[in-house]
Length: 365
Ligand code: CUA
Image 1 (cartoon, rainbow, N blue to C red):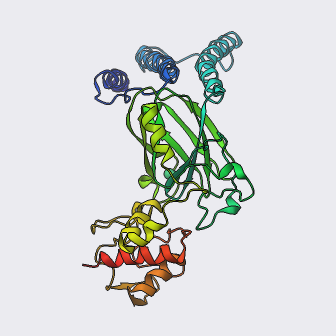
Image 2: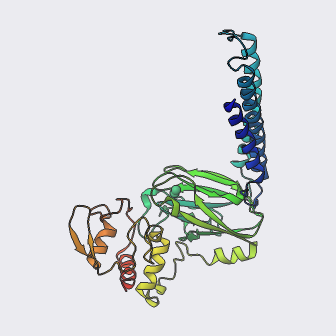
Image 3: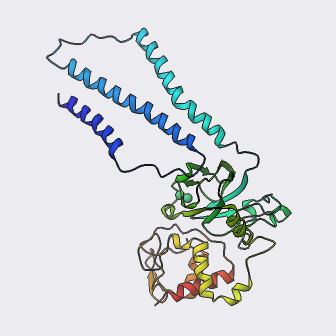
């Protein structure tokens, strides 16, 4: 009898939780209403089965409980019942799968006038690339990646010369225009996900995956990584700003490209510290190193410079410029005590390295 009560409480409690819990999907901001409908269909079918099966279980426990009936009949096979169950189950499974397959077919078949946008993921940051005025994305390959070529653009492909390169985790997109997202990863599995767009896709090293969507509401949305990709996974966040087409056009036109690199002159004007601070953001150092002393994946940079750091092997060293350069260049060579050996190597030029170290030094006090 207790079992019957437990089953009924579980069913009623689950239904109540569904209807009165405060958690709901974020408001839809893309064309993919079909995704929501598919989820609803799945939810209704599995919900009905959940209630019916648990109700049936409660009923049989109650009806055939000990003392109520004398022994149960042993019936190892019942072909008629099995056939019937197989057919009914098959129909419902097909009803579950069919809408998803049909929506997925649309999801990976973009309209011909969709604008291409490349998303590049690595531990633990996002970068983006647009086709330039020529409308063509230049070829790229992981083997071309270097400090001066973070996107791995093929030097022999002129189509890549005018591609706007966004070395920041913030992407902007025009409202009401179909976007074809091309996803690349240069290290491990990531997944680009914006909940309000109802759109996501795995990013698999060595291949380009794609989907499309049309952002329908202006606003700022959080983009997050939806595959566990290492200790910095939770900090692999970005943003997608959807804005009216003219604002987007003005923004994208102002972005650097291979033929019009970011104002190198700014390097002369800006102090190394300011440059280092920008690098810490664009290279995603701040995903693992806080600058305010709070605990994170790696040691905080606040007050780091000048202190004596202990290593896992028991040795010690004073944090100075040489120390930092060594750690950034060879993050796995010596591991600071109390932290996991997870820091990836970054592609940094000597000037960038100096700027980053200057920035960390500036956080000493
Ligand atoms: Cu990238 Cu999780």
